[in-house]
Image (cartoon, one colour):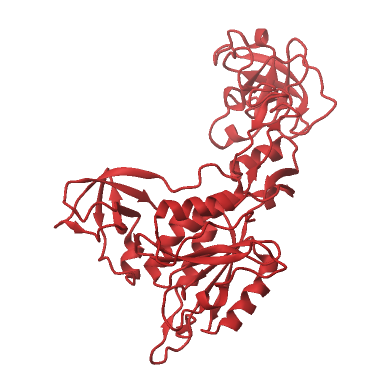
Length: 440
C-alpha cells in the first residue's frame, strides 16, 4: 500500500531517475503478513524464523536395501569365508514395533526403514547372497532380496564398519535448529524442507496483486484482424509477464479506448484485486493522452492524499512518467509511457522495485555490473539525460542491440541487459567501461 503522496514540483521541473525512484520506494510499503498453506506460499517471503520441531531424519534409518547386522558378526567376512547369519525377519519403511537383532542374526531391511535394536550397521544386498543361498547377489538379483517375510540364512561376503549405510538421526537438521530465516523467498527446496519438518502453513508476506492495463484506441488484441491505423497491444502482455517474473500475481486488462471516463471507471473496477496498478500509454502531452486527463487530480475529498502526479524525467527512453495513489486504500499507481521499449525500461527501473518492496524484500533492484563496451562506433546520448540502451552482455563485455528508437521491440527481445549512459556523457567510445543492468 501507499502511505504518502509523492513530492511535487513545477510542471517544467525535470526529475532525475533517482529522485523518481526514491519517491516510489518511500511511499510503497510491504504488504501485511498472512498465514498461507505451503503451496500457496511459493514465491512469498518469510516474515519470521522457522525452527525445526523434529530432527531430520527423526530416527536412524538405512540408506540401502540390505541386512541390518552386528559389526562383530561380519568382521573378516569374504567370498571364500562368508558370515552365515540367521534372518529373523523384515524391517520395512514405516515399520513399528521393531524386532531385535541378536548375535549371529540379521534383519532384512529396506531403504528408509528404521535401524532395529541390536543392529549396528547395514550390509547392502550386493554384499550378500540375498538370502537365496546362491552366492553374491549380482545383476537383477542385486536389486531384490528373498521373498518378503522369508527367514532362514543369509551369507555375507564383506565386512562392514559401524554405522555404515545408516542415516543418523538429526544428520540433516536437529530439533531446535533454525530451518529458514525471516526474509527467505520460498522456492521448491524451501517448501520441501518445511513439509519435511511438519509445517503445513507458514507466515509470509503475500505476493502482490498487480493489475496491468494499456490505453489506446488504436490497440488490437493478438489474433484479431488489423485495420488501417491499428497495432497489436504488446505492452500489456510484456508488463504482465514482467510483473509475474518479479514475483507478483499479475492480471492483464484488455486495452482501454482513449476515453477518460471509461479509463477511470475501469481502474476503479480493478481496485478490488489490486495492490498495485500499472498503466501504459497516455502520459505525454498530446491531445489524446487519456491517462493524464483521467488521473491528473489532487484526489477526492473522501480520499485525502490520493492523486497521481505526472512528471518529466531526465532519462531516455521514458521521459514522461506518472506516480501516485488512488482509491480508498491509496493503492499505488505507476503510469508508464506507451512506446514498447520506454514502457519496459520504465517497468524495470520503477515498477519492479515497487513490486519487490511490496513483497518485503530488501534487495529490490536488478544486479548491476561494469562491462567493456564492444561496438563498431561510439554511442551517442543526449546531454543531461540518463540513457538506457538495449545490450547483450557476456563474459564482462556488452554490445548494443538495435538502435535507440523506443519502438524497436525486436531488438528488445534480443537483449539481456541495459547499457547505462550517464547524464554527463554525450558519447561513449568502444572499449570504455560502462555500467550494465542485467535483465533476467
